[in-house]
Length: 470
Ligand SMILES: Cc1cc2nc3c(=O)[nH]c(=O)nc-3n(C[C@H](O)[C@H](O)[C@H](O)COP(=O)(O)OP(=O)(O)OC[C@H]3O[C@@H](n4cnc5c(N)ncnc54)[C@H](O)[C@@H]3O)c2cc1C
Ligand code: SF4
Image (cartoon, rainbow, N blue to C red; front, side):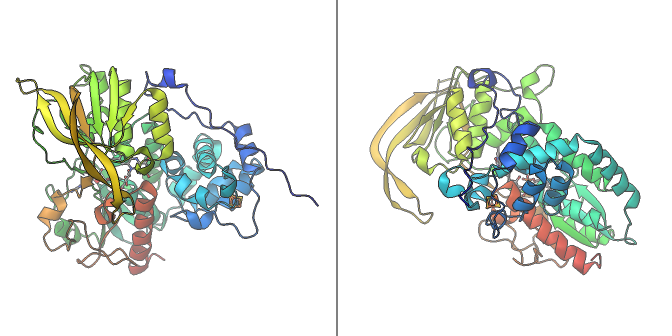
């Protein structure tokens, strides 16, 4: 029998670049049912699939795709949900091209199965189906609290939400303490609406609420209440998922000029505080016309594309290496360029220049060339000895972040490494304080949603074992 000819990958419907650069609606529109089933039927259903091992939370990709190819969304959702508590989020923001899709047997053809897009379709279709409504109702009726087992989760990013969901499903009474006024961590204050609509996060959170998880917002653990106090108040275990949201600056002259922002503050003002509705929302935001964004990761791409949508005349990303070394997702870079964001490679900021009245007027950059590879394996940028000034009235810095410090400062007995991240047992996630666990960016440094979820899941499994829930 001849080999089956595999049809080409089904493209994702998108808003056209000229349209989307003027709105905050989602860029990728999602597959229709027909498109999803057509893409699912490209899957070889390999005897020894390699895709699952590429997923940090080990979603059974072959299994859910088999259900989907038959039009069985409910069955597909059940398979995904078995290991992934935030599928609608992961389907949108996970770097699948470096994970499951890179591991897919079709990857060498350049057209692996679009596993992320299929995951997104399944989650979206399920959440709008009757099956979802009845499953939620059944879950809240059937939940069997295991005596008085109480667990606290600190922070409400993907690591804590995953831990909370798994523990609540096993019968623990889970309370999530979040310092901000909304639940979701970076999913709501960092990643913009046009990549991850807030309603998606809200749906996943509502799912957890119906499972019995209690959410307390505006609770800064380490300030409103201490970590030790949580244990003393009857929480038998605590999971700390406080993230790495402390902005880093390059440490160059002129950083206090008006018009110099961290990407974290800029995106928080827009996403969480709705500055784009000013004066209806009371958060002001500088309306930069010539915007410069420093950095090459997802954060820099998000900031640049946000500035464009807010009406900037020109947005330029400056990066000290070349586009090939940028750590952002390829797709994000391509989308940014399609929308009109310019990229200046091989330039590094050396000073912010002012207009004499305390306002930013330019960014002096040094020209770079690539030298020998450094510890990261990427070629190190070295100075070419010349500089120029890029005229700019708003500069957004997206060069990395450090650990959120409040809880750590208030809890000196919590062992941290030399970079300030919490030290945990790699198997269990337990910290230096017994029955206090940690995971996500506060342990690894800024990483990805799915790695944070994996850490939350591992710690929750250990907590469940110790508290006799399994
Ligand atoms: C702009 C941006 C874009 C990104 N894009 C992607 C992407 O496309 N794909 C991807 O996989 N990853 C992306 N990431 C990274 C990803 O979002 C993070 O790795 C992930 O959110 C980390 O999850 P977490 O649970 O560790 O913490 P976080 O999501 O950082 O959440 C931590 C939460 O803890 C709260 N908190 C902190 N201290 C306290 C305290 N003392 N008491 C109570 N609450 C506290 C914070 O307010 C926050 O809500 C992006 C990050 C940013 C900033
Ligand atoms: S490796 Fe690719 S083709 Fe094979 S089962 Fe997984 S998704 Fe399908």
